Image (cartoon, rainbow, N blue to C red; front, side, top):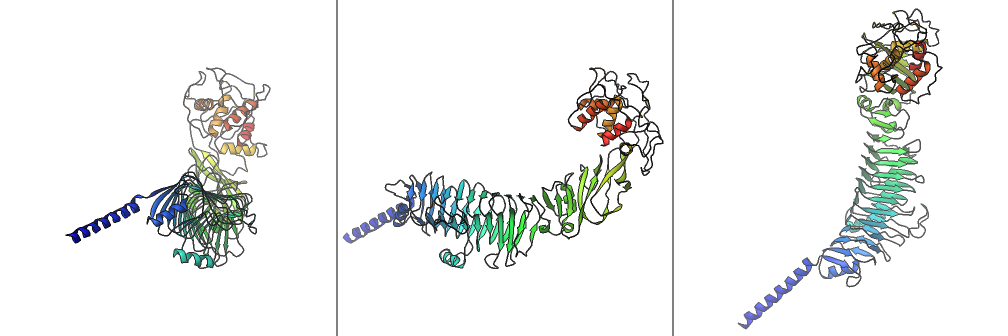
Length: 634
């Protein structure tokens, strides 16, 4: 019986002991560093080790000065909680296990050749500011006796959220991912067992400074999905291995050499594979510099905005031989030589924006009125290229989007096929350059920059007018006005010989008169008489501007008592009044048959064009048809 009782007592004692050990290991998961019982983070880690605790949250409640090492068997969440950790003599935080850093606060390092954070395990940086407050590197050749990376990653690291990383020096990079050289790699791999350090940076992160802001070194993988990156020294991103950038803002100051530097310098560790899918990149110098001494560099760009204050967005190192393939993105200078085969460039007419598309159709669909479209093959062929300008002259160009009225194309010297054009209410007569007009589909030999203007014949309509040949004074009656609604159809004869018997080709306004006539803006008083010196009435002036505007509809066509609806000028006057181009003498009187002076028409034309309106003068002469034609065409 005694032996039985003794055995039971021993079992109960053992069970109680195991229960206490289990409770200690599972329940004690949060520690607060308060400077007293838990002096610092290192003291808490030592306590955890002695108590066989491998997973815990450590919350700072005071500033500390120490060198922290997270053991490989521990999983730690460190909440900075607004406080500061400063190193004693080594790296401020060295991680061998799994570490998650949260909260605001600061991790600082003040010792030469030591970092604020070095990772050999897995780190998730979700909060805090990381810096080297005594960084003294003054140039790429002078470390000032105190310089190093702010963060160095040898294994797996993710940085995301409200995180700030900075380095005020220009000897070491701010953040370094991967191995500096073979000996650095051998030492790190002996600890980690992994040969591919991976760093992922998400949106919300701000990283600045260092000779390079983020350096992706040997054998490393860098993925940037967002964030803000700035540099004032050498560059923002330096890639020697494999990097993918999907978003973010990357800005190099006027003192920096580039925004992104890509080097394929070794076929095994320095391969230089760079993929850019988005982001904004700016620099006063090159945005992207490409170097390859091992013929391994591969650069693919499918998106992003690249702006350089210099004449070139991309700079190429002397030994660069591999291709960079651009399939998208927006650039401040042409990068056609790097565009994918078969692609087309769309350039703004002022030469500040360049984009790339996989086909001519896609390029022209995306082009605005003043963009210049060119085949990359043409641009990079070494041939002389010229700009062909197409002015639809009130219509649209069929090979472009419906609302493209003017277009520019870059072509090589040789035959160019002229497209067709369309315009509501008009027949397309061809493209005019100089004194010749070419039909759609014609081959024109391009030997220099050339401009083509579409020529039109207005289709028969009942809303036109013929002008009076009267050259007398103003009248408020309709005695001097011919109410003639018959349209004179322009001839398609070459305009080097006049279509009007009373209009000499030597007339000072001949070209303008014929342009206005061919566009349907003005007509003759008969089939062969123009009366270039005839005066215009207010109704005629409104109708001319209405024609120039392609006869838009008016809301109310019976505004004035002396402008009844249904007349050839009714809608034109109503439209001009609604647009603020003309006004009445009063609320009921417009005076459609009163003559217009040159000054009055100048005021109307300025209002129509949205230009500065000249002052009214009372002694201006009456406006003649030839002069008006010259004004509206000019």
